[in-house]
Image (spheres, protein in one colour):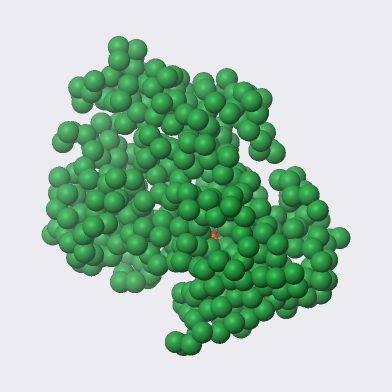
Length: 482
Ligand SMILES: Cc1cc2nc3c(=O)[nH]c(=O)nc-3n(C[C@H](O)[C@H](O)[C@H](O)COP(=O)(O)OP(=O)(O)OC[C@H]3O[C@@H](n4cnc5c(N)ncnc54)[C@H](O)[C@@H]3O)c2cc1C
């Protein structure tokens, strides 16, 4: 069959995957959201499915930290936001009966802390910082800068940049050769203005503005998923993001095998075989088809030398980059700041400071510092204890009293987490040339996960789930019916 399109995939979801005939036996590698959704649908449709997961829990990067915090407090290590536009997430959340609540990222008491001074996003407040803005920028609030340098470029690229079916037309292609930084400079933004706009979208893209593709970023900024276009309906999963993968896992029960890292995949004309570690032994299982949902950062540890993968696939596996993200969580004895929903963007190495628990009951709170890009890679080189100490020391300047109120803490270094080795994909310049090879099936081996999404900025739960449904459509048109 020809490769399913974005609208084929959406139609398949909306029609309950009717008209598809699934293979008898499938192995899914990885129990993140993509792998779980594929296994859930295959099991429902009568296939024999086994999920091999390297770690001891479902969810992968949908991961809620519940330790070492007191009073039932928790914080998100990975995904935290869902919007009504997350079509695939909303579908499965509804189906599994997982609830939503209002996101803490809405209505923050947002402030900049630059050069030891606080400011808000309005021009009068920013003037006190004495930043090297252009004369024109001195007359703008930050939302106006975003409109001038970002949304105006998105508008120029209409129609096309927000088309429901993503394709890189001749008019869009030059933006994939450009970095985000170049696109902003070309639009007239000063370095100081780029820094001010950063917390609203750039930092979330991994902080590597000189490497990231302008096209991938503009596609995101033109969409309702953009933070700038948030319409007050951002949500989070009630009780923690991990409730979502756990709801899938409960329905799959012992079809998921934990602590079984896959080390080798082979195939021939009749079957595909997967070798994995189980209690210190090597075991091999065969199936009609295998679905790999492992991020390409971690897939490099799996041996495909006898799998007959195309050059293009191997090249994509080698080249795809991931964003560096470090999140540090500090439990405070009590709330000792005046803001209801504290959120600072600082020029310190700890970058983004926020109350991760503004609406949780009890006196204790968790302050989170989140770093991306070079700042994340710098603190990644510290030990966990050094990182906590360093963060607390830095925090003392914008938040005096942090060290005194600190009780316990932890941190997550996504680059160093086994079986992830990165936070979410960083679509670099020329990403559109890599995309078809990332998701293309190779014989009996299929590829799903956020990196294999149709969207160039696939780093979200909904796009991981979209890739799952796209893979189900591929499998449903394959041979060897159940
Ligand atoms: C810091 C951060 C913030 C984010 N914020 C958001 C957000 O607000 N909203 C949102 O929607 N998304 C967000 N995301 C992205 C979202 O979490 C991911 O896009 C999504 O969870 C990816 O799902 P996946 O199934 O593709 O991959 P994963 O969740 O990575 O699943 C892959 C699974 O494969 C397993 N695995 C790896 N190697 C092997 C092997 N050799 N053998 C067996 N198993 C293996 C892994 O252990 C893992 O369980 C965020 C992510 C991060 C890191």
